Length: 217
Image (tube, rainbow, N blue to C red):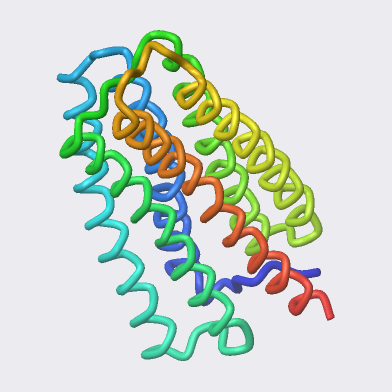
């Protein structure tokens, strides 16, 4: 299977690479932001939140520019729809990473000591799904036979994230350390929001699998 890009589309290839870099960075900032919040490093958390807000705006601009070039210059017409669909779904990852940190900043949940390691682990697993789906997207453009390998890793880490999410919620609702039911619900809400990142990454991976199959037919 040949690469998707030809010598005539090297500029577009570089721009898509830059976009994928931003998606990967969003996952890393998200992970570091959650970890900083949980550990009470609020200055570092707010820095992460500020960075991901700027990154989300940059990613939107780059995505729109890629879309414009694809249509204006009629580049890679045989795969244009799939490329645009992939970029649109990848954008959902950046959006949700930014949204989760925004909610932490606004709602300031109280994360008790016995839940901290679970929150950090959950954010790490969600960030791993982002990293693997970005690798899968790069493979789609360069080495399509590797796509399924990365997709499988996304599914693995998403499943692990589900397990930690359930464990975290059970701990929150079964403990006497959290007296108010509303605070238990608040913890559940943030566990679900962090896990949503892995769910979105898995949705992208599933679409990526379909696009890869279409290219190989």
